[in-house]
Length: 61
Image 1 (cartoon, helix red, strand yellow):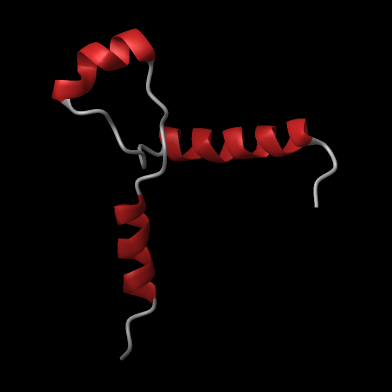
Image 2 (image 1 turned 135 degrees about the vertical axis):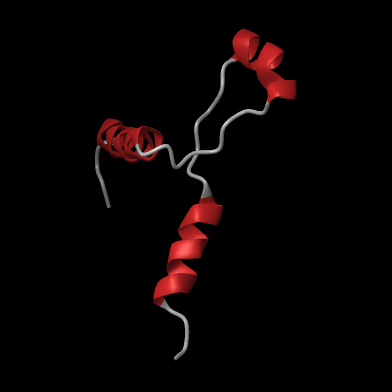
């Protein structure tokens, strides 16, 4: 277990940044843009692309 909460937060931020730079995140759609400009957007990993890769590698042959 990590003793320092700041260290854990930093690791999570780095992982999120990697997903963002690889453009493997869920983006807001056009209908949400006014709210995004006002409130901001939390970028999270696009799990559908990850699931596609998992299925590709673990398909029974």
